[in-house]
Image (cartoon, each protein chain N blue to C red):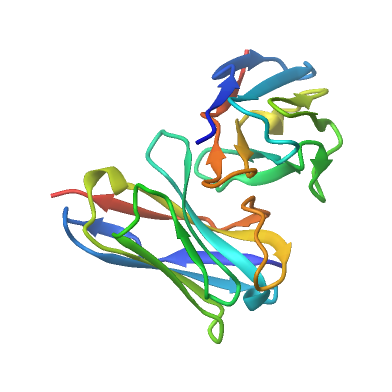
Length: 124
Length: 107
């Protein structure tokens, strides 16, 4: 059974940093691209960032480029999102999500499994 | 950037109703469209991909249709567990993007 479990969310001041983690199990983690998708309170879904299965390629939404860094440790089956220079508008539930296409260099950019999410609140 | 218009934003319906949700693109995306269901406090769940392919385990009362710019999600006979918010998502071009969502509520 595929499981994705996020952690690391919390309250942080504007300008601060936070690192999110997503522990994966139930599939060959290194063979699938992964993404982070966020949802501001009461709002819709916004794709944030993606990383290839090998970790060699990364992609970002314009809204977070230069501030967020996605990475993965395939030996630990864990996905990360380092968030720096946080702003109030980054307040959201952050979900990690699995790409369905098999292959370390394959992407589809739709998502067949999602974690339960972790809440990030940026406020003074 | 592809602009997406999902409608309606709110749909009031009764158990047993047939409901349809529309998703329109500003340019053609072939069949690179997915539909998700999200219940309050829960993560989204994939219902349909490639515009019309049902994800494994999803009830057959859900169906998707369309290609190019106009897409539809249909629930043939609404069940109590189907009251939720539904999102379309295009994955034809970068960045992937979601529609604004349609909340299906009890009439």
